[in-house]
Image 1: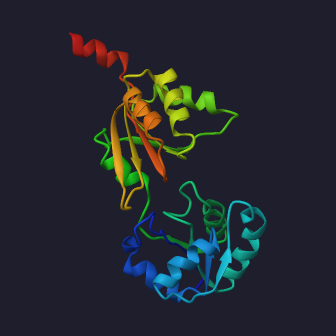
Image 2: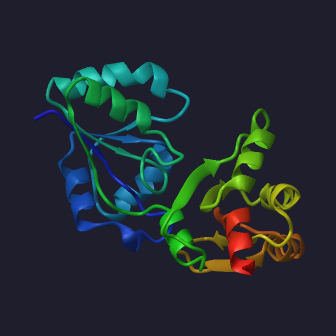
Amino acid sequence: MAQLYLIPTPIGNLEDMTHRAIRLLNEAELILAEDTRTSKKLLQHYQISTPMQSYHMHNEHHTTQGLVKRIAAGEVMALITDAGTPGISDPGFFLARACIQEGITVTCLPGATAFVPALVQSGLPNDRFVFEGFLPPKKGRQTRLAQIAQETRSTILYESPYKLVKTLNQLIEVCGADRLCAVARELTKLFEETQRGTLQEVADHYTNHPPKGELVIVLGGAIQETRKNHNHE
């Protein structure tokens, strides 16, 4: 039966791989991997010998249709990325959409993703939230920051350790230094930590302690003027 599985892989701790994910990776006829060198370590750890092929942001546009034809002909494939759930700030959307358009069954397994634990352990409201992923590096960045400043829900951002302080300072400019935030670092790994406080406090911390590893910013929502007025009545 034609089938595409989107399979989350650990964001750090190899123990976060599920039994079902391991079984399906073994049963698939081909594993599409963002970086075969990275994924090879994971597959070797779980003694998975399924063949791999590269599928990443630089080749997905011109390889997707060929892969869809193979799946439609009956080949079962599994898509994995370097870490986390395919399609979440990683390749996966184009292939999933193309398969769905051809009537191919697409199944995404539940599993590791960085923003959920970062949000839940941030201490900020998580009943409603916005996932922004990585901000645009240049064009459209200021517009996006201005929109985020007005957002009343918690906002989740991904950021590299090299740009974290710059981004926090830009958020201070548009949101104010007192806006609450949390930055989660190295989730699921040995040196996992979450810094909580105002934007200024967290920016000061990472200015004095340059971060390493993958980072998730959780920004508290803006307080609407109507709520402020109501609270003062």
